[in-house]
Image 1: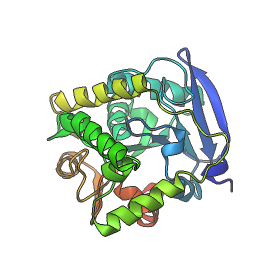
Image 2: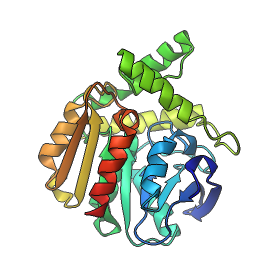
Image 3: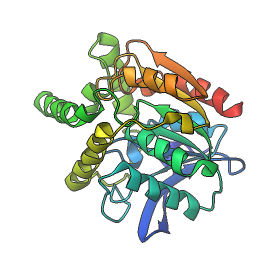
Image 4: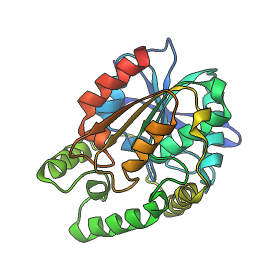
Length: 277
């Protein structure tokens, strides 16, 4: 099987946008669409997570509108991003998919499940939170602070944003960042500053909304996060578990926002079990 680090980048047109995407894994069955985090592009997915899921299921990652190699102007609302994702999925010819939304991608996944319930079979929501969740609107300040910390210490900001500052967290963060560099050719374009700020605005708006009625999401949901997520605080994951009618919850110890990458083996095993039910 092709590894994610070697998967070719393709494009498909939908709604006036040329979406860049990568696809791997079995062609048969329902694919898992990966919805990426704030400022993330195709190269920001942990290849161990993608390859692990793709061993059993088709996996498709893509750049949101205006991000990386996708054309257009990045929307500044989660709802508009969800509409773009639906257009992308339908342009590929799928009538039903599973969704894995990480961080901002988890917000997008919630909107898709609510507005297009027949399109979605199952949801995996990781490192994310509900509209109007506690501390959610502070994502702007946390992201900016840790970006500055990264610049001052000459480290990737994800070392601070995604991982704890314990010895274990620091070690796992470095391993994750090394995996992101395994792809050495045909890498994606960096996310532009204007796209980044549009996404920040969308996340802040999500955090300031009135809470959504999560009981309307009747799909099976797998929730996962670290026990010390500073970016989208972990209590929001517990809140979602209380409000979603049909969910399974995993919280990883001594882990932050990127808990699923720190515990990628355990996450993949659980995700495959969930998808197979």
